[in-house]
Every structure is written in structure tokens, then in C-alpha cells.
Image 1 (cartoon, one colour):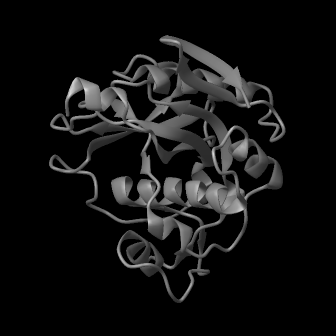
Image 2 (tube, helix red, strand yellow):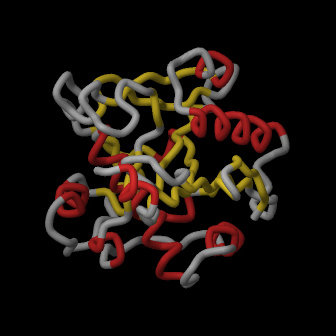
Image 3 (spheres, helix red, strand yellow):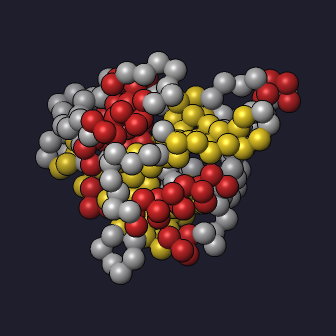
Length: 232
């Protein structure tokens, strides 16, 4: 892609999911190491995630987003609607399943039909997406000039929401070549993208404050050539 084309590339709606294991003395988050051959963030440790797919708008769920979480998701959106919020949450669950093999939701509640592809494989595990298990941590728009641009919403769910594990999804030739459950303080010592590092700090602050679902959420973007952090 030319520099001129990258400069005008519009960001795609995207979502990522931070899974938090709170069963020990301190919370641990799941991070995956991206394949070194990727054009976007090669070799970096990231949360699983990616762009919203049309199928995410057609997938059934067994529970809806918390109204406060939905409202925060839609602040400053170009076309705000409950359907957009729902598709974003489902994209986070689907991408996590595709990249890690972890199905987040409720067992034994899977719908009888699902869109072809990843959602059909998800339903085959017997799990149904339960959106009330998700909270919303932060939003970030990739700055202009990058080879990929996303308007990414960072969701969070407790690791107890993992209802099924498909083995063999993470390997040397996959999108993620390694998974690591890492304490929040130790995670900052990994090779992280800048935004991942920032969102880890936001998550830690929210955890310490009790994860109130009505709290302001940080919003990262570039304005007039400079990084900007606002609130939603």
C-alpha cells in the first residue's frame, strides 16, 4: 500500500477481548504473540481481536449487553445503534474463538442455527454467546498512515466465562503462535504495542476502582497529528 493510500485509509469497526483470571492472588490477563510474518504488529503480544464481520450481525445470543456497557460503546459512534454494539461484542467473542480456540459464553445454550464459518464451529462446541458477561474497557482508533486501521473497542470478561477449549488452534503457523496468562505488572515487560500497554493501565485502574459499569471509558485517537486521550 502506498503512503498516500495509507494516509486516507478509513478505520474498520473492530473489537478485542481481554480475558482476566481473578482466581489467584492477583489478576492475570491472556495475551497472544502474533506471528512474525504479519504486516500488522508482527511478533507483538496482543489481546485476541479483529474487525467486525457481517456474520456478527446475524449471530444469535442468549443474553444482551448490560445497558450501561451498551450506552458507553455507542458514544461518539458514526451510526450508533444497539445492533452495532451487539456486533462489536460478538466480534470480540468470535475473534477470540478463532485465534485461541476459547469459546466464551454459556454451555448447553447454543442456537440451532448459526452463520457459516467461525460461528458454525463455535456453535458446534455447544456454547452460546452471553453478552452480559462482557464489560467495555477502552476504545482506540489506529492513527492515519498505518497499513491497517481499526476503530477498536476493548472488551473484558472473566476467565470463568470460558465454557469450552478447542485444542491445537495456537501453533507456529497460526495467527497467534503463543498464549500467555500474565500478571498485570509482568505483562508490561512483554513486547506490547503502545495501545495494549495503555489499555492494561486502564484495566488495572478500573479493577482497583471496582469495575463500575457506569464509569467513564478512555478513548484514544490522533488529532491534528498528536495523540489524544479523551473519555466516553
